[in-house]
Each structure stands twice: as structure tokens, then as C-alpha cells.
Length: 170
Ligand SMILES: [Fe+2]
Ligand SMILES: [Fe+2]
Image 1 (cartoon, rainbow, N blue to C red):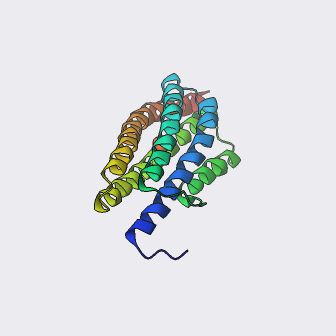
Image 2: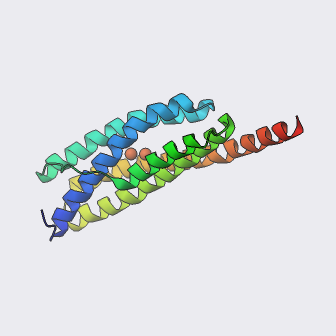
Image 3: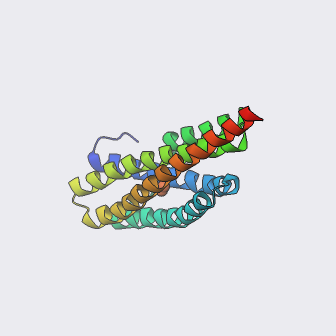
């Protein structure tokens, strides 16, 4: 279907966000299993619950605007998932995998942050205030999670460096 209005584009972008969240919902349990740092594990676990709520919020947005989600793939998040797979092929040490995973999580949260910033703006421009509020709720969670994983990535980075020194010294 040709997209020729901001409303049609909004529906497409919303569908994309739905695909993004569903792909992320699949990735989060795997990342939790791999996480060694207890705070990272906990953050990922809590974000899985938040992500389930985000999917519900997106469903509510579709209902609010009287549209159905389109079948689409968010290639941005698919790319991030592919990067995670590609890293595994490089046989990383547990410490390096942990560092790669936490920085991958930061990349994903920032992708989502920009995605929702755009969606909130589109909803406002279209006069969809309730939809904008629901999208803002998702945006706030992504912002908080981005901060959390960024702080953790600094700590995990130091641990990875320490592990590296230990290996070099042994
Ligand atoms: Fe999300
Ligand atoms: Fe997220």
C-alpha cells in the first residue's frame, strides 16, 4: 500500500515499533541467561516485564487510533540481533561477551529511544493526544533503561579490563 500521508506513515512506524518490541522480547531471556553481573541480569529481567507492557501500550495505541498493525519487520532491531549472533561466532571470552552484551543493550535502548521520540512527535502532530501519552510512557522506560545499562557498561568494562590483565599476568 503506498504511503502518502503522515497518518499512514505513523501506522507504518507504529507497526515497525511493534516488530521491534516483539524481537526484543525474544532477545531479553537469552541475554538474561548470558548475564553474569547480577544487576545486569536484574535490569534485563525487569525490562522484559516493561517490554510486555510496552507491547500492550502499542496495542492500545492502535485501538485508540482505530487501526490494525501491519505485518512488517523492524530491520533496525533485526540488525542489532544479528550483531549479537555475529559476536557469538567470534567465540568471545565470558567477560568480553558480557561487555559486548551490555553495550549491545545500550545500542538497542538508544534505538528505541529515538524510535519513540519520533512516534510521540508524530502522534502529537496528528492530534492523537492519548496515543502520544501511551507512547511517552514507553519512551520514559527506554530512557531509564538506557541510563541503567550505560552505568552498568562502565562497571562491566572495568571488570573486563581487570580480567584481561589477569589473563595476561598468568
Ligand atoms: Fe522497548
Ligand atoms: Fe527497551
